[in-house]
Length: 187
Ligand SMILES: [Fe+2]
Picture 1: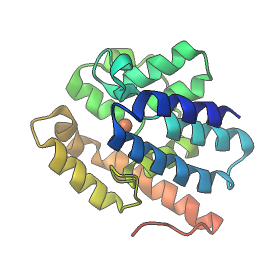
Picture 2: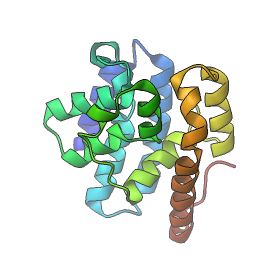
Picture 3: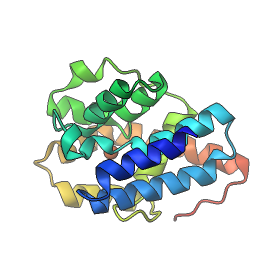
């Protein structure tokens, strides 16, 4: 039930102002749906909710600091939904490394990085879904991020230091997915 509300919320904030970001989010969420059946019901719902909401902090009305994982987590916390969801959004896809470059490690530390399977799966899905919502390899996705942001932007500067954490999460996610018999939908 929650996932439906989360989808509507994401659509409301992203579809019109940020159509490409909305395509990415839909891709991540639809792929999360196909994986969710292999998780327990609590984790399944959480993964799908986080997939819909992970980039909501880009929405102009919510972008208070300009650091989207933090802005998204703060917005979700204000809605009063579960604490695991805030933490997943706050820390998705190696956000701590970008936070160091952006200068928001203190507010980000209010949120917990839960370091488990759901977190790894969210990172994996985000980092293997291209800006238009299509599945891509992790390497291709990282190359695209590097090209789009360049080496001056804080996202580009954080890529090198974050790569070990990113790769480790993707490797763990793929290992687990393989044990479920799930067929990877990207190269
Ligand atoms: Fe993001």
